[in-house]
Image (cartoon, rainbow, N blue to C red):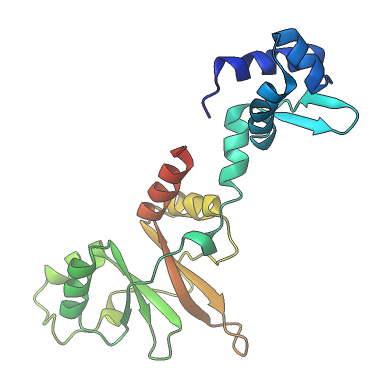
Length: 209
């Protein structure tokens, strides 16, 4: 967050003399209370200042980096997930390669006919399979995919920060977003996808005024 010179001056005053009322801040800057109202509102909404009735303004003690970190930790997967790119476990490796090319993704989510998650197949998996002598049109992706429970997933209620940490830790470019079936809690329904592109879009949004 980029502050104006006046907002920076307000922070300096509150740091040095807080708690301090808006009228007292205005008097020190030789401005009216009405003139300062938008600046005080911005600083308070940003979390740099706290305000209490009949007490005044005081410095929150948080840096802009800390506030940004808090904001990032309040972004949730459910608000950013995209449609999952899914193939069935009986889909041929050839068709999976075509799907990956057409959808321009780095991995495909593999499900059973009923929609429950059973695996993930990556670009590397498909490349390795295509280098052999097997018939790609007859061999299903179920043969080469990474299977449950060795798949890293996230839920709609996880934070975007958690999803990013999981992707970095396990060196994957996307995560299936899942939720358990009500009647089969051991099985996971695929409800979305979080990718590195998702994280970049969220980061760009944070930088917009």
